[in-house]
Length: 272
DNA sequence: ATCCGATGTCAAT
DNA sequence: TTGACCTCGGATC
Image (cartoon, rainbow, N blue to C red; front, side, top):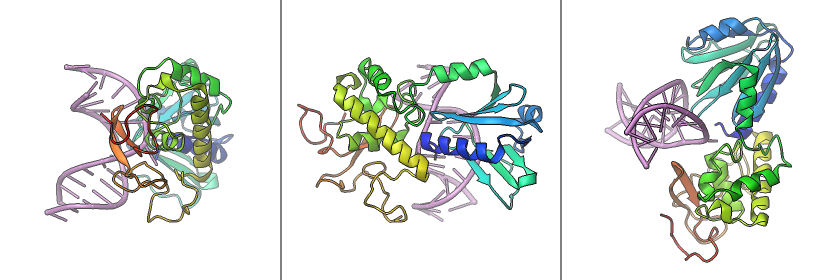
């Protein structure tokens, strides 16, 4: 379940588990065998998260870059280590402390040069979890875009770490029509949207879940604790409307047509 | 047993 | 704009 909050939790967790230790590195699935052999037994110095990217810095200067993509998963075990599955691309392990992490299905698992790590970070927009004071940078990048704000929020060069669930929830909570051109947002709207992203991602990083509705208990699995994401056809939690879904930027967008109306636009389902 | 979609990204058209 | 890639769990036969 990888949006930015998940990645930041992994960075923290893996730093606690492995940083400052010699780490056994392997690739049961085989596609990272060369890199694993190079890292095996080295000391991990630190782990950092930028947007949805993880960077592991090793003694000697190697950098391991991991991106989970859509289906990637990193499972961390603190005791009773299981055998990795045949699809496990990467295993990090400290047998002495009975700790391991198993990576499956990543979009990226590769060794990169330190300067490539810098370039990677340079092409990402501000990360609400790493740079909460970067509201002005975010607003400046929105201002140059004519595309719908719902599409622009998925562009990692505009803001790093936001994915399909958070874009929908943040636009609902901000009362913004996803189809509005990003550059048409007022400075106040852009600042409010940034604050909302900081709050939502921050809560996600604390809890590990995308729960955006405070009044629904996190333990209540009957209804997803969200306002609009994956709630197409269900009643809006704030009005009598029905949540709609349509493709935007190659993904499914979700919104309440009456709570998120563009100024001057006709009410109702005006989505293309 | 099989199918399908998923909180993502990139290359090819 | 579409397809490919990666894995897994839940829905469906």
